[in-house]
View 1 (cartoon, rainbow, N blue to C red):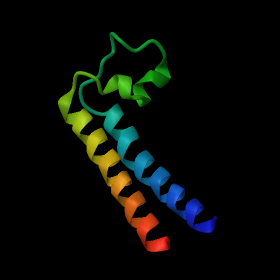
View 2 (cartoon, rainbow, N blue to C red; view 1 turned 120 degrees about the horizontal axis):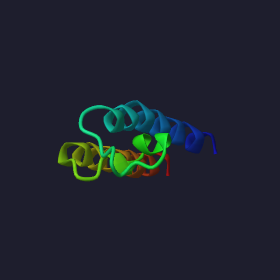
View 3 (cartoon, rainbow, N blue to C red; view 1 turned 60 degrees about the vertical axis):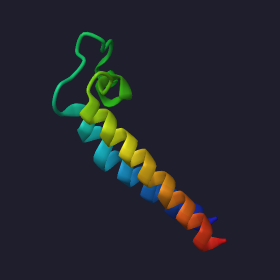
View 4 (cartoon, rainbow, N blue to C red; view 1 turned 30 degrees about the vertical axis):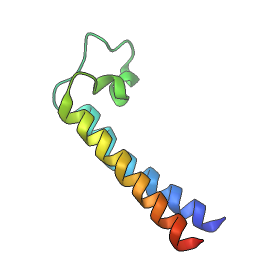
Length: 74
């Protein structure tokens, strides 16, 4: 149970430290955003391939970390 908490803590830290700044910088979809918090979501990355690549890579890295940790702790 403790290993799960550590794993999800790492995932949350990686996600927050990379994805939130990615959504906020660069080009934005201001015309599609309906609330101030929409800037922190994937809606702000649509139509911007560089932001979508960051999201894809982070998702891939988290998946690899998950599979490796399952293999190591099994």
